Length: 221
Image (tube, rainbow, N blue to C red; front, side):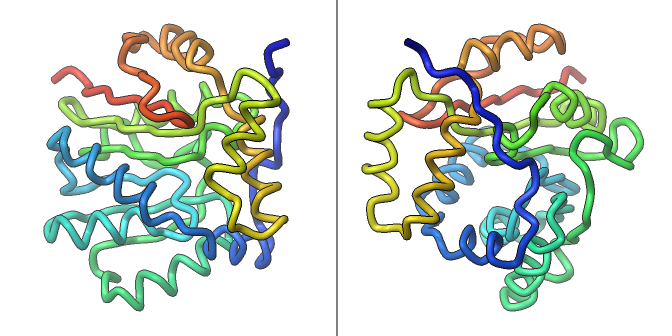
């Protein structure tokens, strides 16, 4: 029987949550995200990172692209507190701006950002269509929307196999977080149905690993 989506808390807003998330090894996943994003030749003159967590992606991108300027937002103050320390340590306070914000109701006017990116926020949101609609709204014509998230496995055995493959060396708490995130994720069909409702070609979303889907969409000029 196919897995039914089971929601997890939308915000990881305790200091312990933030530290547990930050201590996980995100290096390979973040490097792959940056590789794939930059292969799309985005304009990062004023980009938005939605659900930045502890700000690891903006730091990686700014290290690779000296001209990048990124606003990094999250709904968790604890995550941003940890992220702010990372930005300062990296010497990137002039390139990365952090802000507490809800992805479902962005404050910026239409067509503000040259690129909008997001990694692993969709599965945290009960009704993620609202967040994607906001990302599209604030994206400039010609700008790139690049979103990656977990894809929900088909069955219990697949969940267990993924947790064993990617979190075997993590703590029991971290393994439980990954397990819950997989169960809260959307299927590729659900992602594509959401895109249809937003008038985005559904084929812009593809399964790009054994546990991820990726959306790459350039807004028409």
